[in-house]
Length: 191
Image: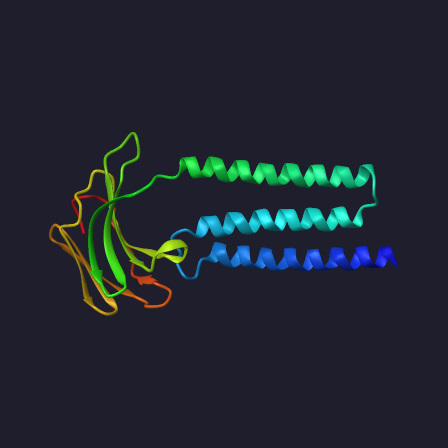
């Protein structure tokens, strides 16, 4: 009977791991454009590694085999934590240049300055706050380009970005914050 109980426990843990993997897949797809989605994805992957390790440890007989399973699972979890820590150090934090608010949404000009190049400006639309804050790119400039001269909400579903003589308009979906089209400049002197 203890063998059946261990098998049932392993199946429950495996089912939980499958659910977590599906959640991680949804997080990778990011249909709601969450600004902090990388933390949801990283946490889901770590939880899946721990659940799979626990399921295999439950199935393994007591003794050295179970210890080996736990060591391998622990090393996999520590390896994942290391990968996430390194990736966190590589990301560049954007600096807010200007912001225009309309209801619960904000149109924000951000500047990213990688160490060896000039500033790169982008315009993003944000909604909400905290862990579930949403963010979508509306306009992406090029290196050493000028910041947008004007940003505004035209109406509830449309935003406008002005850079020099160029005027870009995009539609923003209210729930998912999907932007269509997303403008990406090829050179700083052309539309």
